[in-house]
Image (cartoon, rainbow, N blue to C red; front, side, top):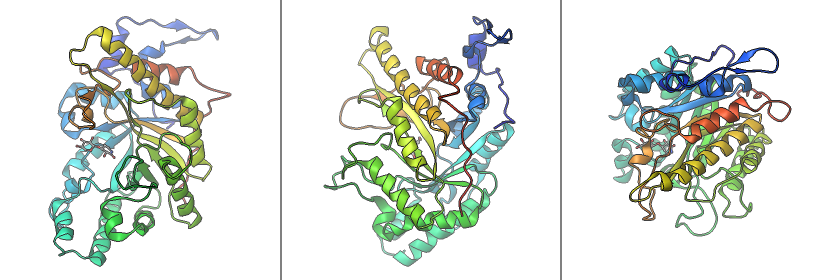
Length: 395
Ligand code: XIL
């Protein structure tokens, strides 16, 4: 992290510089107005990586590239490291898009979060269809998973900071499974819960240095710790994995939030992050965005309260992360409203469109959430906020 420098060349910064001015500091030094500084630069003092998901197709747009390169010290491939993209035809890996992404990260001195090795979604059809029609049996499926993890992790060996090894393995309280939280999905149904430990062991064998993460949504805060508390379930799962010496180094809370729900305070976020840290693992906020339920004919009067609520949520997550020393990175799932996945994803329950989830608007201009993140990073420090504690991969 120390090798990173603050570069104020992004479009956002340029736009702001026009009206900005230096503010005098009491120490006699002149410090720059935080609004003129990048998230990446502001976070350096905390040894915190600030990341974004990258839409590789959007890298053709110079303005998108510029913001992605300057504001962030970490990047995650939004889609191009998923199994359906890497191995569309059985046995034939296509690394082209993933390598375009890696080249961008390496050119901009950015840490990479590898996403994702084992997930129920975006699997290649040869795999899901082969299992469905019985031509791939359980023993072969397990071997296919072993081979995939080994191939992908070895391919990128030494270039990935954090790997999302297993993603979204656990049910929600509103899933129609009835009763308590438990395991879910394609891999659980066919291989049983043991695939989780296997996946971490196989990933470790393929790269001894990457930090290996479990990643999930709706684990932003503890609930009542009862049978419907997903965060508590994941906490027990990680505790059990550590007790069995499974090489899990971190837990990622995706943090896809919406202002239509009552959300969490910075204290609740910190409590969740500290809870995992007490198990000996690092933490990260891996896919932060905050959706707004859009009114039919939006006006300033109807949008402004939503933008303020959105800023509050982004900020609570940032403050919670800053306050928990094992929270290593804060990654947004896209940085501008034009490219956010929330524009096309259906978040259900018939409430109309939920979008405008990013920190910059569709012209890459700062929204209140972006200003809140700058302020949180700028105006925090000892004694309550201390630099991150680096995590060493466990064997
Ligand atoms: C999303 C991408 O943003 C979309 O472009 C894609 O169509 C679907 O997947 N949890 C995850 C991410 O772990 O991989 C998902 O990304 C968002 C939810």
